[in-house]
Amino acid sequence: MRKTDDVANATAAARSLDEPAYRAAVLDLLGLLANGELASFERLADDAAHAPDISGRLMLSRMAAGELSHIDVLAQHVDRLGGELEAEMLSYADVLGDFDARTVPRDWWERLMKTYVGYGLVLDFQRELGGRLDPETRALVADVLADNGYADYVVSVLAPVLAAEPQLGSRLALWGRRVVGEALGIAQNALVKHPSLGGLLSGGPDDAVEATKVLNRLAGGHARRMDRLGLTA
Image (cartoon, rainbow, N blue to C red):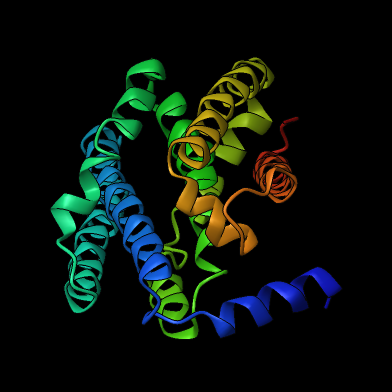
């Protein structure tokens, strides 16, 4: 394990929900996660409605239902911390809506790619933040953000089509770059507008170096997702 990981883990283990500033930062993060789960539900439900076969519709609908159950789990934890979930969600209410408005897919393939790379990056960002929490909250966040199988579904459906249609691959590679650029903007704006999130990353109120490292890791995660489809990031 890298020395930086050891330091991050030690810092996280020492954090206590009895500390008002840290508790407020956790509530802020849980508001972000709840918005992400709500957006994921809406996105997966919409994907299900556009799926070309009954198998895809059923699979995506089940995934969407799982996102709603995650919101209930987050609400219970927020309540235990003395917060109110809807109030914590308000400051993020328009973030993912703006993302969707700027990245409207033209067909089923762009729809799959958008959810795969765009929301995949948002999940990675949330996991970065969740990995710096106290053990109890970190475990809860890890459960909420656990892999739901969507990436494997997209690869199984899309990769064979891309292998047979190089022109589609070129179009979706460009689309993926556009989508991930918008998603990176979400992460950057969240760190700027919510300094407490930056504090979770670094253990301090303002660590631009650590934030840059996180954004670089997010870009690396995107490159790996694209590579699974045989596309260049």
